[in-house]
Length: 432
Image (cartoon, rainbow, N blue to C red; front, side, top):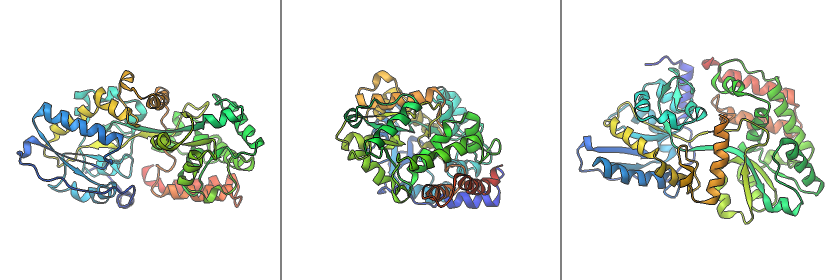
């Protein structure tokens, strides 16, 4: 078994019990096929999601091409997170399942030997050639379960990123153009404020404000900063240029009226709704809002990468992982490969998802084309830079708390960064 400290084990095991995004779980009936002809598959995507639509088609293709039967069980995210370490250490393990990427999740399973090193399959099927370097990071882990290692433990077949949503109708009404540079972005913010409009939909009680803060740091950063912050390659200077700029600029945004003064009490849903209903013309957040905005926003809008930044928040989607106790690993690899085919990837892309290996000509929905073009632009720059809370268990709550202190004026930027740095150092001590 790979080396892992007691503190690391407890922290990661605790992370596996956190409930999130619970979906209704149901179990498929048993199959009459011999075990060698059956692929036992678990995932937790909703039936109407882009991924589930694509994977349902992949099941049909798999059964037609292999003659094997897929025994699919719908699980909830919570079910898999809570029971993974117990189920995967037993004969009840599936052959293939969707699992959350990251150090405390897939990394933990890798470090404890519960999921399979699939490096040989990656070579055999050529999956690495279909995945940008920043997507590969969340699929490869070290012996201690830190992402960005040398060993493949999973394969993502969709992605996500954070950019800037612009209400094009609101811009036209204000006589403004969608910015293409950061200077233009600031000029637009000033122009909206001058017209009595708070331009940025934001939420300080939950994740969006922390994402904006990290994006501001990324505008001043390079890939080495990301590797230091996320992968523990070198110490992070919490009073350095990148993080000082981010924290000071975020406070400046509030002081100048770019962000509402009561942002510390606003939740993510409220921020998203303020964009949907046209109250705020700009929203910095993730591609996961895209489908909802298509359905609910009654105006013309667009999503672009943050201006003048080579780096953007984002990552692969969750991973296909093969349990070490899987009975039919080769069938699992065949299924993964089908989900990476252009025709299956196109289903993800045409239903509001972000495929990682689609043929652009297969994407026929105009709004989906726009989303995928923005994502591909980030990938072309090797720009995916993950999320600010990833390095340490519980760091999400720390970021929310400290940025609330900053925007309410109870502490300055230097104190905020010092507090963040102290919590970061404690939370990542076992990785460094």
